[in-house]
Structure formats: C-alpha cells, structure tokens
Image 1 (tube, rainbow, N blue to C red):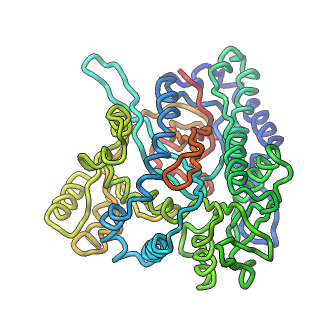
Image 2 (cartoon, helix red, strand yellow):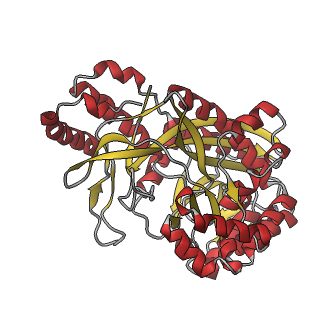
Image 3 (cartoon, rainbow, N blue to C red):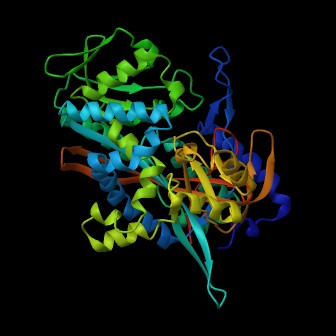
Length: 475
C-alpha cells in the first residue's frame, strides 16, 4: 500500500500541519490537560496529517463481520458452563476478575432475563504476507474484542472531516471519495434510543455511569448529544459511583431507582479497572444495577466475554464453531484469529512458556484486564517469564502470535509540532446489539476507528500519547 505522504512536497508539510491543527481544534478534537479537577484546560489530541491506507476489501469484510461478532459475544456471555471453564484459572489469580465473575453468577442465580445492550468494538491489525512473487497481502487479524467503555467514537468521525479538508488543501481532492463515511455517533444514538424505547416507560431516564476523573469524558458528552438528536425528550443523567451512595434502590419488581427516578438504561463508561470501584459501596451499586430490570450496557456477562482469555478459548480448534451455526461465517471469523497458547499450569503451559522465551520476537504477552496497557514484547517476555513462568501467576496472562503489519510513511501532528514517522494502523469496528433473552431486537455495525502508532511502538493508547487518531482511506 502506497502512503499519501509520498505525494506531498516537503516544503508544503509545515503549512499543512498548521491548517490541520486549526481544523482539528475547530472540531473540538481535544483531551483534558490533566486529571486535576481544578485545572480545566484542554490540549489538542494528536492525529495523522493524512489518512492512512486500508484495503477496501478488508474494510468491507470487517464491517460486515461485526454483527456476527456482536452475536458471538452475546452467546458466549450466556453460556455459563463455558465461561466457568474458561475463567477458572484466572479467577484464582486475579481478585478483580473474581469479583466480576461472582457478580455474574449472582445475576444468573437471580434469574435476570431482561433487556441487554452491547456497544462493542473489535480491533484489528493488517498482517503483512508476501508470496514467492513478491505480491503483498494485508490480512486482517484480531487484536481484541472490547465490550465496555469503547472510546473515541466521536473523534474518529470528526477526523474524517478534517482529513477530507486537508486532502483538498494538498491538491488531492479526487481522493476524498475514498474516505468512507463514519456515522458512528448517529448509529450509537439510534442504538441507545432503541434500548430506551424497548424499556417502554417514557418517563424513565438514561443514566451514564462515568469515572471519578477521566481526561476523555468528552466521549460521554458526544453520546449524550447523539441521544438528544434522535429523541430530545429522553432525560439523561451522568453520575459517578461516589455520587450515588445511598441513592440507589430496587423496587419489589426490580425497577432501578436513582434519586427517586426510574432508570430505563444504564451505560457504563467506568468499571473496567479495580480503581474504578473506590470502595465496597461502589460494588454494591454495580450489583444493584446488575440485578435490576433496567437495560444495562454492558451486563457483567458481556464484560467477561471481552476478556482475552475468552478470545484465547474461542481460537482453539472446534470451539468457535459451537457458537456460530453458519460454517462460512465461522470460517470468516476464524480467519481473523492468530495463534493463542494457553498458559495453564500443565505440561502444555510449560511448553508454551519455553517456546516464547526461545523466540520472543514472534509473540506478545498480554494482561487480561481491559485498559491496563501492559503488553510484553521481545526481551520483556523473557524477563516476565523468568519471574512468573513457573508458577500460577502466569495464568493471569495471555500468549499470542505477534501481528506484523507493514509500516507506512505519515506525519504525526501534535500540540507542539509534527513528526515524520513510519507508522502502523489499528482498525476498529463498532457494533451495537440489543437483545431480550435469545431474541435479537437490533444488531448492526456502527462505524469505525483508526489509531496509528510509530512502527516500533507496542502501545496503542491515544491518551498516553503513544498512538494518534487517524482515518482510513480505501485503496
């Protein structure tokens, strides 16, 4: 794939960077400067000067695949025996995951069979393969499935507009037709409206559960606006755990009441890290919400289904096919999987530890918790397994093949300047599913997100500055 950067004249880059930065600021593509509640200043989010190439075939394939991923996650979350087996060793070494799993069991024992809303994002890299004739193929390979607090919805769609303008400014206006539309916010707004409507009480509110302190809480504002554009009559509240102590209760028929208002939908933008639960009362609130008849996004079963251990289990022979009836769909989903190597306390686990230590550049070791960001590559794998490879602590990690995409030339625009880089892009597809038991009410793909990192970086997080926002251009 050819980078658009090669079409730029070197003397034009600085001026285009200034224009791009102004355009991004005018669109509100910013983060909070810090978590300090007293310092409410913003900083520009970093992004690529030009959109990055993604094959049209890969884009269409992954977009069409997302509804099947949505349905897969839903089925997995309702297979109690499967989750119990998959998470067995993990709950013995991770207290946070154990608490989530205990909540899952309690919810199932309570007989909860209400409405459930999933807002998911599946992330991929395009693995480079070269045949004997030198022909390149870019094969989509799944990194992970995110089921809680999927970030940067609004920024992705806004940046498409910025990149369209920059292409025109750079004399590449004919390429703007290759920028795919990104209606993620309108699609998410429709999904939220559908969930609220399915609850069938026009007086019930929509509740966002937000972090105690979050430099990216613009996401919630954007979702709030998306709901209002679809239905301005929906009453929206945003609450932290600490603001709900003593304010949450269930009625005898399991209706969720917050400050004496009935709640139709609860969307969690928090709750994926141990520190999000600041004390036991936070866990009590999560439990009360989980036991209610409100539409919860995500229910704890969805959260568990998004753990990498589940991804590892699905990648094993003949497991995925138990959840997908259509053999062709199962083949397509499986084609995105890389090799996974379970680190259980058995002879196979021992073998896989030694395999990774002998050839660490071929693998990546990941922690289970979403948002932790601690991935291990190369010599770090040797160091990690020298420490935990011979005891049960290794069960808290997932070992998988390393995906190797082709770096592409681009320019990173930052708050303080710009940097020419060879970069790789991570493509995410959003999806929405609304269900009542086994009945699927809504299920659709809902836009995309592209994040790009320097070719040698192993961190894809935008908030840390390791990755930048990007847009795909289809080639």
